[in-house]
Length: 246
Figure 1 (tube, one colour):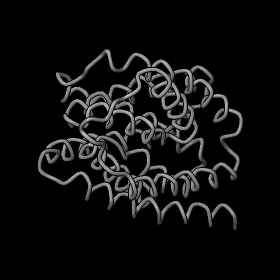
Figure 2 (cartoon, one colour; figure 1 turned 180 degrees about the horizontal axis):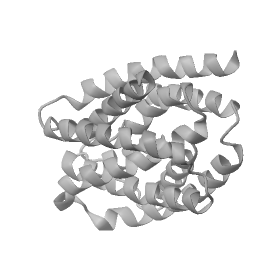
Figure 3 (tube, one colour; figure 1 turned 135 degrees about the vertical axis):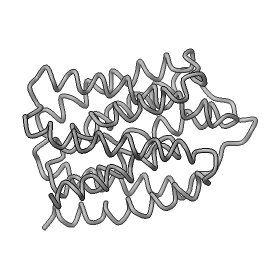
């Protein structure tokens, strides 16, 4: 029961952060869950719940989706997810992946603290930039369920003038890539019966957390929320690396 309660709180916090800032569920969840499960088990749980979470948020922001902006980056992301599937399927039980995850999370934290809002007149490349970011986000997301920062970077450039369009398009990307990952691993039998219990607990958690986050979306400072999340992720990432190396 204690383990389930801890998992519930981790996922609740992560889904709340995503509801407020548009991303962060995977970062928060993958900062702690690998301390209790393998990277493969953690990723599959987080991606499955991220699918539910993103559908919930995207549905609430549906009218703000701009479909044309999704074509290139989403196509590249789906290709990246196929690569991520092969890596996770064959190497997801190795402890070294926990170290790689910790290093990546630290890099994300540095980005979150140093990144600045884009300038109003920033021109966004519509070809190579979404292809590169889509492939990277799809691959990292397929292995560690934390590919969000690549998509956040692109959609912040594209929709810095409208935070609702930014969040809505971000969620659609998460939905499509999560469907790809869940389908590939489901066909290959990577899900176990024990997974269902954790998924049920997580489902309740993310529905509550996302609702709270979206409700406060217009009232809370996204920058302050991201800084708090970044500090939490940094501590957890360092702990992940130390635990894996000991």
